[in-house]
Image 1 (cartoon, rainbow, N blue to C red):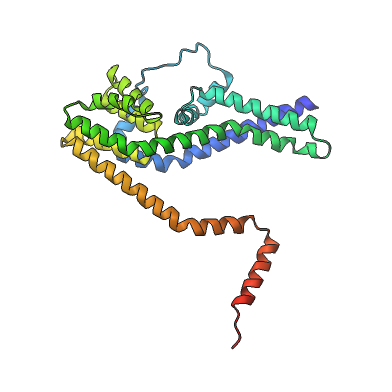
Image 2 (cartoon, rainbow, N blue to C red):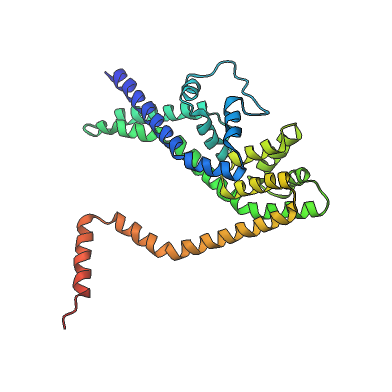
Length: 294
């Protein structure tokens, strides 16, 4: 009986994560259209990219893919999961993350099944399903923290590249110098971009890989600006200076919006955690206060 319950639980868990990742993939379609417009990719170019294998310098050397990897590949979700891992800066594979999630789900289910007394052991399914998402939540939270730190360093790096180019250095050399002048995660990402370009990958593809690894709007602005300058010409150092100023102004505007909306967000959070019966009592009290008889 226990073995049948565990098998059924794993089926439910796998089905749930497949639906979650599939819905997330569909929700990213609008974001992908914005990225394509910023990078200047046409439908023909995207069709060429989809018809052939994407240029890459590193290939997986695993002779036999695991069951988890085959499932992700068949469902076309491996790339999405792997992008989350790369954003977090972890040296994992998508199959390893899936295996870890399934292990957490099984461990959480078994722990709740054996440790919780009746009738609370019926919650073992919910505890196991919740445990399945712990590795994904860890990766997502770590990725958001890493992207936030990258975003804070990015305007300074653009100004550094602009100054370096005015001093006579080439654009690719300026990217390599960022690795020595800045800290992680910005240094590692630009170092990887320089290595890809230095080892033979076209600069356009190396920059597009950067925009995929770091899905920030500011990075897409940077990539599209460099690619546009490469096609049409112009003063790239001056363009990067203006872009850095624009990004800082966006940061200031975002800070003002957070400050202005702080009171409303705190009020909404407070009202959300208050039970409904207390909300009704508070409404009646406030109505009594504001009702003034003349």
